[in-house]
Image 1 (cartoon, rainbow, N blue to C red):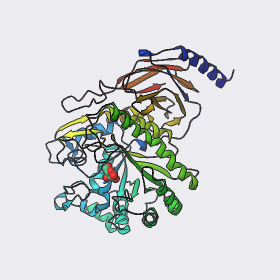
Image 2 (spheres, rainbow, N blue to C red; image 1 turned 180 degrees about the horizontal axis):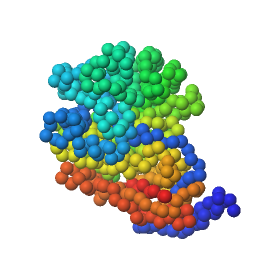
Image 3 (cartoon, rainbow, N blue to C red; image 1 turned 120 degrees about the vertical axis):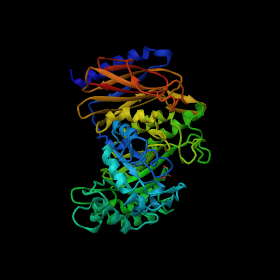
Image 4 (spheres, rainbow, N blue to C red; image 1 turned 135 degrees about the horizontal axis):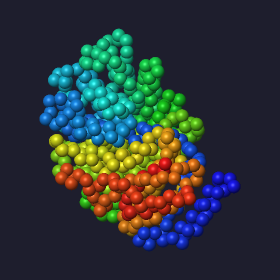
Length: 519
Ligand code: AHR
């Protein structure tokens, strides 16, 4: 009998069994099919990328404390933060903004630190003494093993500033800029992987119309000179959320010079930018609305990608979501830590759902950068002077690192929705992939905060016979890790799953994330 027929029979039997089954706590069973025999696109490691903007305590205090700090550091970088970031295999970092990038002069951030100018941070308030500049960023990326993504100042800069910055970073040989870099302490050129030609050019980057920006983009893109054998991906500043007209105009006017278009989207609990909602004091209404916001990423990617398909059916041009995450009201005690917010189990589920979505769109989405890495918005890490805590979102990135470089596998989920009030979302979200060693990984998210669910996962195609997993959940939807209670939301081994005859039966706790490995 052919393997596909055997698989169909197995699935039919399992469905019959599942139909009669009730799961833990009596909620209906859920069926998931993983097509392990139909490998799709490679999941680029860079979709688990990070964004670190020069604002608040994101860089200063969060990453950089300086060599003379009493906080343990490696050449000025916090040791605890470096180690934590290395552990999640950060693949790429975007810097220096964000809105900040379009007012940044790279020359302010090179040379002896005690001679660097202090500038107003025009985008986010306060001052920037430029202690963290090009050398500090490029060395930091090298230290944690990440690729480099530099946002170019288009709003107040010039193509000449850009091309000289690129030359300073990447030139070998004897040009004056290469010699200046050497005089400043770096002999060999760095590898510059991505440049963003401006940021949010429809808004803080210069309030441009898409037609105008398309020409500006082409002008800048012409002067991105990459060294031989070290290509630089040129990223056009993309749409605000669902503005597909922006994407259409850029693709029509400048598509042949674009390697990737960016997309920014934030989930705001209340949907109101003026009163976004608290990061910690929220009810089920804002639990579901925030998850709904995260789920909206699927539709956004689909719509922009459809527009791009008109011009680029072979998907040469990537759609890189270089800012995403939950954006709540700033913590009331944040002081000058602009955009500082706590991070709860809700953020963990949002992150997991969003990463699932990127994985299933791996044919078009080749990089994504969560906003932001440390102490800003939906952060991986929070610090307070010498203290550091890892957030629930950090642990999702840790659990999902097994998908870096894996092949996406098509997945079907048949699950009843979870409702609250008039809001409705899928009860279970999932994604699957096969890593380069041939091991299958399945990610499962139970969005329902009240009900446990039994899922039956039908594995169609080659797979191993052994199962192990990790789970992330917490007592409350608002559970957080704090400096005094840092272990409230942490992954634990998951042993509520059994694999038999190609079907995994897994009992998912309410409001939980599970990543299974089948080897
Ligand atoms: O991530 C914070 C800000 O959000 C960025 O600076 C900007 O690009 C976006 O509007």
